[in-house]
Image 1: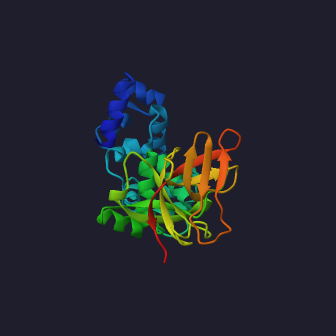
Image 2 (image 1 turned 60 degrees about the vertical axis):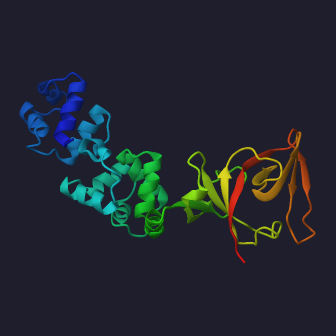
Length: 281
């Protein structure tokens, strides 16, 4: 639908005449009529008035909502065609004009959070916001294009998981690793964790990546990622009997010994199951 068609549809949903809408927006009958016939385009300030009044995004009014996710360059062209003032737009989004230009031109200097602020303003879902970021950030777009072409998907790589901190906190994220879709289930979320130390060196050398399927339970004998008593996450073979959980190292270093915990008395949190390893030799 065109901009004019969207305005007309929203007006009718509210049960308003053109004259009534013009009064609400301090405009004129003829001006609103021209907008609805797509014979005149409202300026940016007027677009914002429409968006606020109808409780929709400017992006929705322009019809972007009904398109597939735009590239940053296409979005930039659309803003230029609609004569949207970038400085004012950036202020509304909550980022600097310089940062917005960097996003629209896919240049370095904009953070992931900046991309998400723009996507929120555009009305994108969290999933679409992530795709927009992966497509357009100079830090990720090469990997994203590669994974799109070869039936791979990008999975976040975490250097560590700290207790009391969200697993996907920005400071933990090292980037993304392309992963064959055959190892990924649509029913679960995943992340890679980088192995540190030698407590599992019979299975994974230090620096290897393990693909973790996020889940809160494990079968006895599976290798999982576990938080114990507020310490950073650890990767171990896990054995479970009643309310006892034993973390079994798989190490050539005899300093690493099995540790058993009572889940009733101690704080135990299972984060997920290791389903794949990218080993370092």
